[in-house]
Image (cartoon, rainbow, N blue to C red):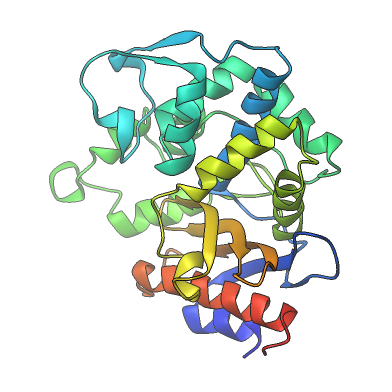
Length: 301
């Protein structure tokens, strides 16, 4: 089944691409269209930080104080803690890549800077991939565009208690915000994301130690129900997932077979907030898309 048909079955707009890590022709669908990466952008942050540690620009052993009253909201990790936390720069990286910790991500962005993050991908030829803001700024800006003071105020809103907007109305407002518009917010393409992963896996994206660290932590990501769901247990998957406001649901990663063949895959989806599609159904759909692309590259279609 063509990948475009798989996206139609999921009732989402989809952009996907896969290619051998070692080089050669790839295959995709809308792979050059701009997409909102959500937390997939944390691979870029990790690469920039690890490269800066490797070249001595920053000290990976420096401890950072993560104040409880200034933390970026998030569903997991440090966002849930009540007390101040002190951690080294380098130990924030696995938190960001394995459980997608938002506090760790924003602290690392503040350490290395958006300019270096974007310069890293630009130097690799990825001209359409860009991180516009840290996560806390992005979330607060989204809330402001939706009519709230800030993100924390928005997530406490209960229509039955507080009145409009309804959940449906809020979803429509959020879908139109800059953060969810790849022309205005943080953006990438499936093609460029695959190119980034290829470069990391070939040690072409930066110092070898930096690339190795990113590879190691992506292999430890806890989320296994997207790309990995499309393959047998003996197929190794190292990935980074991402999602935002029930509108975008993504994953990009490396699929390694026992025969030594290795493929980079990126699947981005965008759901209309008015759609009745079950969000949980999109996860195995991402796996099905990844499998279809890799099977075609392996001649198994």
